[in-house]
Length: 128
Image (cartoon, rainbow, N blue to C red; front, side):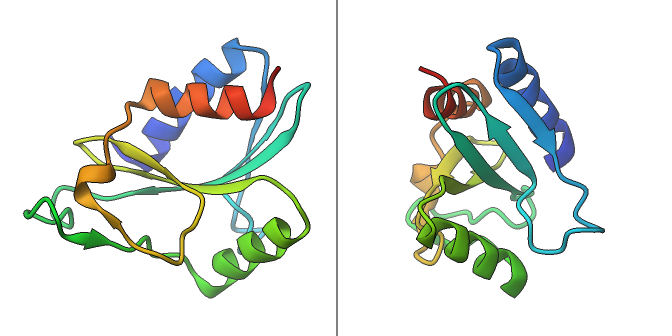
């Protein structure tokens, strides 16, 4: 399954919990994260990155740095500085991680969340 399929599965669960989920068409909005979520508690912007098995490091301790474009990186930093909720969600065949500080690499072992746990994190950030 590719990044889009994983994002759709996460968004299906998020929407079922009553959170509004909007997939952004980035061709018209360069730099804007993949999805915007709105619940009765707060809003959240999430950029999804999926690491294929071909790119996933073999060693557990190997650091992973998500590849954000300069526009994505700056958009997330600027919105975060405004006090908005922003995050990068990194996925792979072994698991997922929510990555609120994307300028520092994470270890392969940190990819320990399921898609359902990512969806639950989004729900808990946006719904009370």
